Length: 436
Image (cartoon, rainbow, N blue to C red; front, side, top):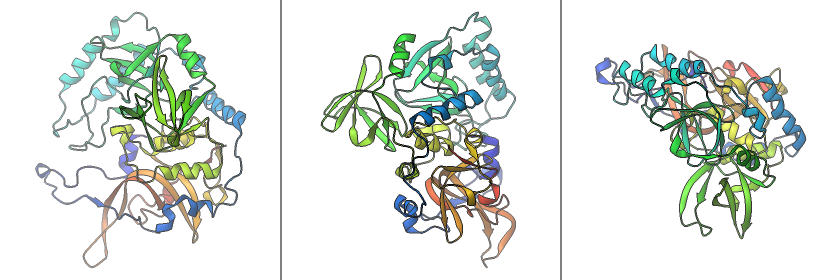
């Protein structure tokens, strides 16, 4: 998701602006638990499935899903995880250098709200030493521990606004245990590796990677026996009795299946690295692609916290959709803008099939659920929405908006935000797409 665009839609920051700014007014507040325009029953998948014209219709078969993914690769919106040739990439010095230049020419703030010194970027460049690298030879790896993927090789938080700590500009994405990556470069201190994942590239901590040969990489990816995580989060254990916790993985993660007994599956996250997972959290192979399955998977994420770029092991609006559709085998692009260019273009929501349709706004994207009382509804992951600020007498304060923070996956009326300066979600839609 594009940060500058997202800021134009939602108001971010601390609940109270710092006193030194001279702005001591409350700039946002907590949203109600049931968002405006919604009702209690709407928080259940069955409510929307029962209103769907054909909830169990097969949208795409297995071969058609593969064709859908291959078309995305051809269109250049994403990379094919399961074709080793797709990782035959050439990452140039310029690409890596340009990422740090974007930060060098801007003003950013640290954890304490202070302007970041240029010395930070100088030290990062020295650690890169990219000019002295003659050849970049790709290596293959699997993520052994959940890892943030950063735009710069640093743990330092850089924010566009003071104390806006939930929105770290360096955060690009996050990778789950078992995710395959190709490594192109390492920092001089050997702590960071520049990686290409399925739909994003950036820096991850080298200690979180398990390096393998290209043959081992290809063999594990092509494993015919696998499970896909269908729970919002699924715990991984070191032992079959599930008493020694290892890490957790998020919805849509694919893991090679070694076998199972009772209610436990044994999975392989990298060659020779086996873990155990509850069978109730996974499905053997992909789910069939039907509106029912997509709606049910989306509602398993209900109330899951928002995480900008996967911060804190959570997900943002586009990662939410990517995880949901990954359970049926669709490998969507990472960002909302690219997701809004994927699939079949539909003229408007009135003509769209609920459960397989997304509506994209600038910097945001939602899953369309259907209509009720002549209003459109969606489920989505978001941080806040705008509403007109109201005076004590109940009259709008001209030109002012208030941000209502809900910070979770929620069902909402697409009229949410109506009357604000930016308008409602419905008014801001720029693209409607069916994923087929």
